[in-house]
Amino acid sequence: MYIYTMGDKAYAIEIEKLLDPDNVYFGSKQHHKGLDVVLGAESVAVILETEHVIKRVRWEVLEGCKLVLTRVFPLHYRPQDQMLWKMAEQLGAVCCTDVDSTVTHVIALDLGTEKARWAVKNNKFLVHPCWIKAANFQWHRQQEDFPVAPPSEKRKENSASSNSKCKENAADAASSKEKGKENAADAASAKERSKENADYDAGAKKGKEIAADAASAKERSKENADDDAGAKKGKEIAADAASAKERSKENADLAANTKEKGKEIADNGVNANEKVHLMLLPAVQLARN
Image (cartoon, rainbow, N blue to C red; front, top):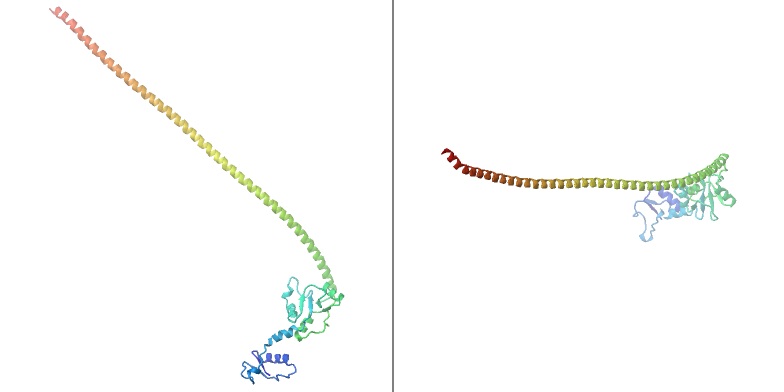
């Protein structure tokens, strides 16, 4: 049998060690970049994708192990995104964050966590994270002789300080929550007042508009009254003019009549003079005679 690979020779050697650790089947017969150098008919050739094989072998390393990792990763980081978590899953382990009866191993740096103490109390394996790294390096499950460190005084102090800080944070959170409720109530009250002010402003604006309309109506009424007074005065003037015209006509008629009568009187005077002259004419002639 031969090994064919698209990788380099070092990769082929490592694959040979994995598939044939005792060097029984291949005998260092590795070739590259072509199947035409392989002796034998195609009917007796087996093409093996060594990568489905590698994953399966890795999967069997920690298969059946359920791990809880406690205080191994930095705070506020998703443990599922951390390399050690992914490494354990690639080796076939099931990783979780909470303990239960099905957990087989607790991975911790020291005994200073509740989950680590739970493992001791319930006879579970308590191992250092290096146990996972060693299994990944050896491709074989290691003995659980990777002890964790005892909790130091500093860690105890930090734990006590952390607990105190957690209580303070909880108190602050409760205070913040209460403050948030008060702020929400104040916001609601402010919103209601704002609405009332808006209604008041709208009413005031409407009142101003009504007052402006009333003033305008009053001004128009005054103008109309002035127009009516002017019209009345105009009618009176027109009536006076008509009356004056009528009187002027009457005066003209009277003057005409007076003139006519004067003419008549003058005519009568002339006639009278003529009559007197005629009457005196014989007397004058007699006197002359």
